Image 1 (cartoon, one colour):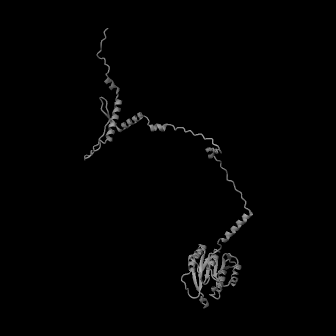
Image 2 (spheres, rainbow, N blue to C red):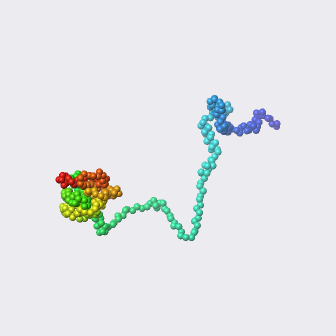
Image 3 (cartoon, helix red, strand yellow):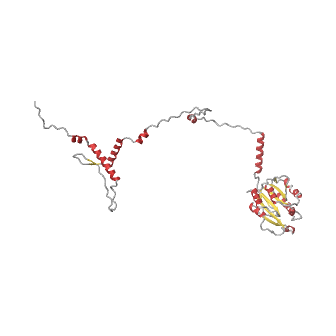
Length: 354
């Protein structure tokens, strides 16, 4: 039976038609996007949007519009969000970068070299347990028991008595000699020159000073202390070389002391001042005719250092007639050590004037 050919049978597609059908609308759209992005990058890179040299026209804005169209439908314009999604899709298709793959790879395991067995003493093996270190037990502090010996107790009592004696006691008092202004303190030292010029054959100061000091010391209270230093080229003091409490018995030593003091010899003012400052008094009364030799600048500095901030040095200079020298080492010492300076003309005593 003959076979009839139906004119409605569709012939097989040609090569061109098969190629066209293979390209789906989605793949064509993706190829279009990539092509247009490449063109845009090329235009930006080569500066096609810049104004040519020598022209005055302002640059006109330009751009590329990406669309997707389907047969029989209106074209769809792509937004920035659509382009960003396409870039993310291309990144995922490209796969991870070499840097990301290297970061994801585990670190190679290092092999510790073996320790050579060398002759000699083996190094100590130290094992550290961090957990045990963190759980160190605490102990209650132990009470130390220490017993002082009798010698220690005796020394402590001696030191306590010494510091107690150095502590100021009682109220201050004011002392005045040779009708001068009063000076205040608790510890007083009187340093007087007993060289030949201060005796009866000279200015006659020693006998007058004896009466002045007896009166001044007699006015001290029991909590006050005093000492007298008489000097020429050496020094003497009342009994012991220490400050004496102003007790009635010690006050009675002043008159006999002057009876045994003779006026003779040369003068060493510096030595007399050092001995007086060694008692660390509150007030030092320095009495002399100021005869040679004067104190040198270095000796004045040493006096200032010994006096410190505690001791006041008040100077009284004796002479016959008016004061001849406007400057002297006595004025400098008084000025540098919180003191005062006075000059006394002994001729006023002999005439009965004060």
